[in-house]
Image (cartoon, rainbow, N blue to C red; front, side, top):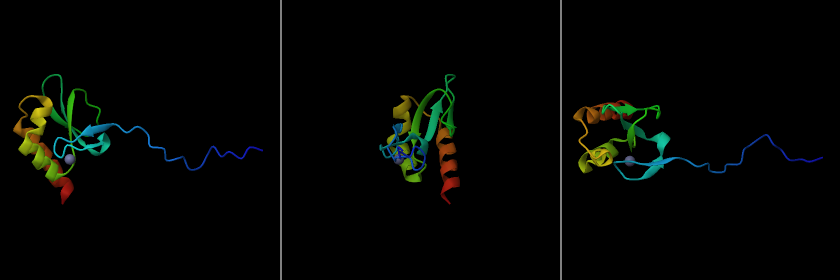
Amino acid sequence: MPLLKKQGMPKMKPRKIPLRRCTGCMMMLNKNSLIRVVKTKSGEFSLDFSGKKSGRGAYICPDLSCFNLAKKQRGLEKSFKEQVPVTVYEKLSDELNKNGS
Ligand SMILES: [Zn+2]
């Protein structure tokens, strides 16, 4: 009898995790753990928590220090190659403050 167990603990073989660069700390991280800022075709910026909105995206850690870094280095502007509205930063910081404390 073959005793190969098909069920049970799956081998923890690392699956290919989609990595994205945080615009703050510049680290490559699992995109699921990052906040996505997306610019839609119509030119509107929004935060995308589902990761499903279509458009051009930039990523940032849900971390205030990354946010501050991104702001300082204009990381979002660099990603989108254009001005990012202040409201995007405001939304982001709202979100981070909500999560933080
Ligand atoms: Zn980061």
